Length: 97
Image 1 (cartoon, rainbow, N blue to C red):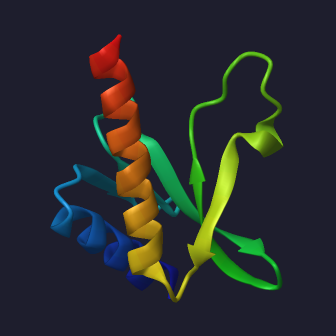
Image 2 (tube, one colour; image 1 turned 90 degrees about the horizontal axis):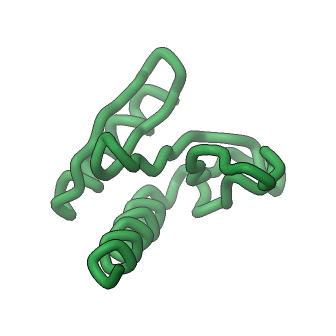
C-alpha cells in the first residue's frame, strides 16, 4: 500500500509541474528543487495514516515541529495541492528577497 501511495503522490505532484524524487526505501517523496526539497511521508495521525510534510531541521526548532499533517492517505490530491502551494510560497519569498 505504501509504495502505491508514494507513486500516487508523485504522479499528482508531477501533474502540477512539481519536480519529484521518490525514495521507496525510506518511504519519502521529495518535492521541489533538490537544493530545498519539501519531504512528504506517511505517518500515523488521528487514528489513521496521513500524509505529512517535513522540512530540514533548523537550529532551535524541535524535531516534532519540523512537520505538519496534510491529509489522510486517501486524499492524495489534497496533499499534493498543499505541497505545491507551500513550494510556490517558498519560491515567491526567495524571489522577493
